[in-house]
Image (cartoon, rainbow, N blue to C red):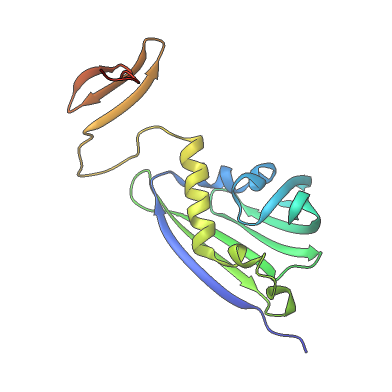
Length: 184
């Protein structure tokens, strides 16, 4: 019996422009670093807005999937499984500009119920909220600059310099020095 695909959707506002989010989504070689349950990823071919991507999951990437990815520059990526066994059938990322310097990101995961879900290994990949959290973490690591916030005030900044750690609290500069490990 063939089950219909079930969609699950999550949304969040990111403090980055749509261009930054799109670049992270279209960097298929880096998916292994942040996409839930993916242990290997590589771009096989790309032409215009179409890409073919190979993903591995499980230990050492033992389960292989082939995805067809359709890119809408700066607006999103739609990926569907074209070869391999997976509960996930497709993932659709939609990126829309929100306030200045921010983006509204929506991810929909369509999955097919079946015996493959019994093991639980693919469960993290079925959660669109986990995809959003992973994307946020990945983008913030790649773009650690100050976030764009309106109506707020930056109270604290921390920088690592050649002179050591330096921080600014309410505009005043402080040099951080290590505490003694054996206090007397």
